[in-house]
Length: 261
Image 1 (tube, rainbow, N blue to C red):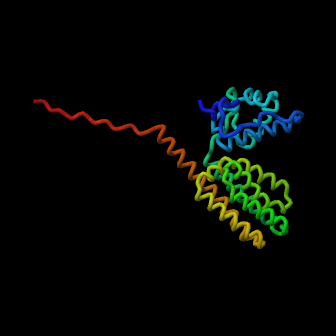
Image 2: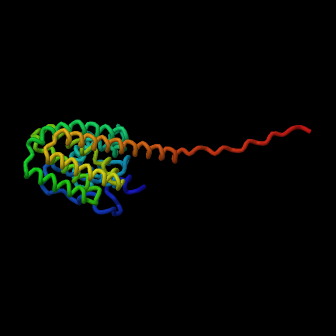
Image 3: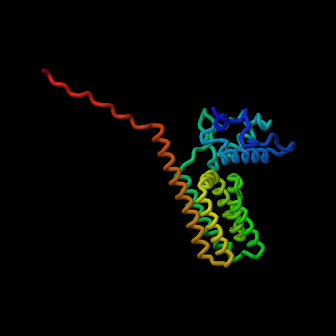
């Protein structure tokens, strides 16, 4: 069984440390569970933990040298965010990728982020626009998929921060986290990554000139387009995998009919 499906602790090295070796000495339980959840989420995003991989409480607890309590809290958090699934008597596993979920996440994001832009643009100033421009450039030049998803989220959130709507920001942030695995798939398609960078630049330009209608139209098109792309990609991949798993049976030759003499 591969490292990605064996769970923790890993017996052989992968592309760098999967999880930090230890937690802060006096970390409160709440922050301990948060650190564990973040580490597991990062491992899922970068593909170290594949869809369906078991998330064994005892192995995770041993890795961090903690009790089962913060591990259970971390797994509950991941389950609530759609990263993990729990089954009775089977424990938690990494949630599968879903074409329908990917599309729905981006449909909801398009509505919420359009609203946030409309509220934020009148409150942007020179400093907030400089920050957004810097984050836009950082996302465009980022070559590491795991870092790109964070830079992409930071750019988007910088556009909405001046809205001053903390509950709206929390909702959008949750959807960004749920969509991280799907966004990483898009990063694997270089032409679409470049297309996203161009759309980000156009969106930033509309915000800079305070064109609310144009900015809202651009962010909706950007997010709905991403959702449809991911839905199509995952649907086609699932169809191809099903065809490989159940290839059509070759038709045998029928015996030639014979006649009596």
